[in-house]
Amino acid sequence: MNASKARTRWNLFAWMIVASGLAAVGEVSEAADWPNWRGPNHDGTTAEKFDAKKIGNVAWKAELGRGYASFAVVGDRVYTAGWADGQDTIWCLDAGSGKVIWKFSYAAEQFANSHEGGPSATPTVHDGLVYTNSKDGQVHCLKADTGEVVWKANVRAEAAIRHTAFDWGECSSGAIVGANVVFEAGRTVAFDRKTGRVAWKSQAYKAGYSTPLPFRAGGRDALAVFNGTGLVVMNPANGATLTEYRWNTSYDVNTATPIAVAGGKALFISSGYGKGCALVPVDRNPKPVWQNQNMRNHFNSCVLVGQSIYGVDGNTGQDVSFKCLDATTGEVAWSQGGLGCGAVIVADGKLLIIAEHGELVVADASPTGFKPIARANVLGGTCWTAPVLANGRIYVRNATGQMVCIDVR
Image: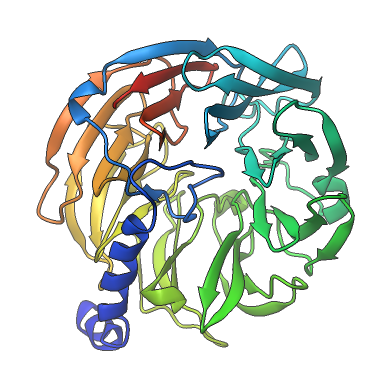
């Protein structure tokens, strides 16, 4: 779709995307928990203020084991996961000191396929319970205060989907939807979050690597799932497909979490391997407002601020750049090299970026250019995991399991 047609069609969405983008950044209090993947708004944003000049102020370090799990932070506790010696370990650490409050280990596969392997799913903390997912699909529900097992299941076995030879293992974090916790594994599977009983399963699709997105569409609850087949919008009460948009990507690697825009009237999706991105209305027979190759998320998700989309374009090991797109047209506003295949969140209206090789960067969320405010080298190794800011501290990790906590109060 050319730019002029995109602008014409976008007239129905433009004012809503501005409102929804700004509201998402402003919904969270100044000091807030980050209880699940992509934070409390499921969009990688928080309104929490922080001192950018302190981003090199490492308060403590920890060793987690291999993996790419990000962090859930509730109160004074930090939850994450890593793999070592044939086991996954779920960690509960003290936010102030890094001291281990409890840990839970179990036998699990590494899935070191073109990377270090280890868990990619981020723990989800809700109502005193922690939900986790391993690369081989082992789902555990643990008590948040002690690590005691409440129930366990296997989402890969429940989904019963045949995986390809390029299987990178389960990556879906749990999404809380009413009385259930939901994981994507080809079929989307909803477990009763207190008992582990299977509440529903969606129809079968190709397995992807994304986390389901709860959102509001047309005044009702909905669930966006980006699986190996493409974008599917489901009824969160029973998993029934409401609408879908086919999106074929090499190796079925659809990994980035969709972003709800325009008050839930459209969803932004992006994939790597040269595929690109699109803004897809939540209609019965959706046709993209625009679609192009200007943003190709290999695995990390973009963020939306106002009318601008920010994120990493390109596959790791190739020519990668950090870009800003105009969400109304999909056109590139600016492009910045040198950060590699890192990850970004938004805090206090600013971009908080971990570069692929461990540099932490704070920059203005501006559509007029890349405007860094502060930079600090905080880690080595490969840093693909999204950072987290919660209650005055930034948490980052690398693929081999080195973690740092940075005090930015």
